[in-house]
Structures are given as structure tokens and as C-alpha cells.
Amino acid sequence: MQISRKADYALRAMTILGSLSPDRTMLAQELASAGKIPVKFLEQILLVLKRSGLLRSKRGVGGGYRLARESRLISVAEVIEAVDGELVTFIATDDFPTFSGSDGMVKCLKEAQALINERLDDTSIEDLVQNGSDDVMVGYGI
Image (cartoon, rainbow, N blue to C red; front, side, top):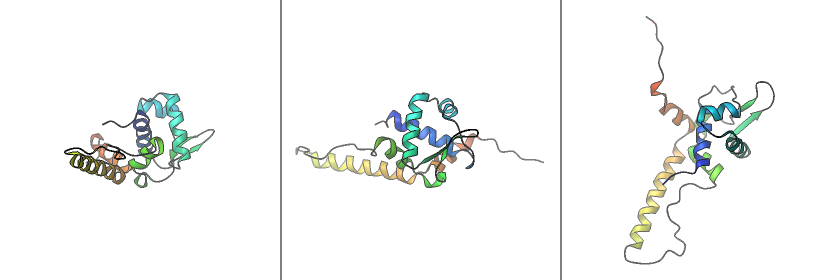
């Protein structure tokens, strides 16, 4: 299983923006460079994220993009749903054939799907930023 390239890039952009101070903006070109995302593709994704209410943009000097809400209030699930329309789906059960073991297979995949989607919903952009901060040097004085 793999998330879409669009969702991957959207999460990269949102995580980068989530690591900034709330009053700071970042240009699309800077985001593309930092996240190793093709600029044209990122511009389309940023527009979708803005329309969905996850980003704000500012034109002119000092302009760019920033999160529309605090990073702790934006879930990974919201970002994926904004760009892909739905979360992880392992199996379509409509008209699923009946055979020996089919009920067990459907149950297993539905449970796995629920667990993954629950985790995506419970994880915020802030969580992503904090989980990656282990390598940040902490300064101190003697």
C-alpha cells in the first residue's frame, strides 16, 4: 500500500509549513525546494489545500503560504482527504463474491483499514513536526 504522490507532496508541504512560526509564510518555490517537490505540481496542490481551508496565502512582499489553523488542529487524514478525496481503502465490498474464507478476508482488511485511518485521523501536523525533531540540537549555557 502506498499513498498517492499528491498526498505525499501535500503532507510534505504541510509539515514544512507546520514547522514555521505561525506568523511566517513561505513561497511555493521555497516549499518545493525544501520538500523536493516539482513546483508546478506543488502549486496545484497548494491551491487545493487553500480551497479546503487548510492553508492561507498572502500576495506581495512578505507573501506566501501558511497554515490556516494551528498545526495541532490539522490531522494527516484531513490533508489526504483534501487532495485525494478519501482515506485508505483496502477492498471494495460491494458485490464482493462469496467463497470459502471471503468473510474472514473482508473482516481482516476492513479492520486493518479502520486502524490505519484512525491513526491518520489521530495524528496532527504538529505530531509529524515533533516526531522529526529528535535531531535538533538543543543549546545550553554553562
